[in-house]
Image 1: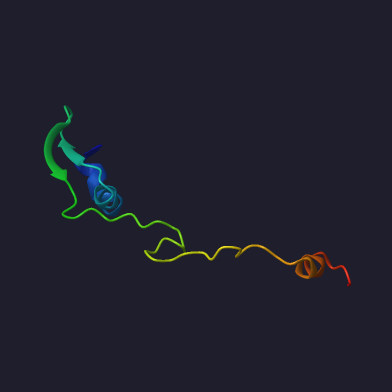
Image 2: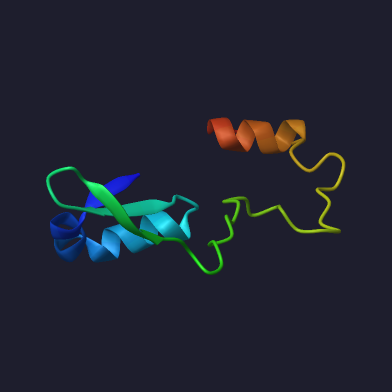
Length: 80
């Protein structure tokens, strides 16, 4: 990704966030947009999965989502 020095002044926070996510941001200057510097992350941000069950050793028990006939009737609002 490229950014002029003017853009970098106004959008520095956004450019740094892009670098943290693995992008290399090249800063340019002048009408010819000559590359003069680069913004790169020292340590990229580690992606974290949005998964509640993504833990080593966590197992969902067999039959976890199975309901008895009485429970099914209760969920449906039926009386026994």
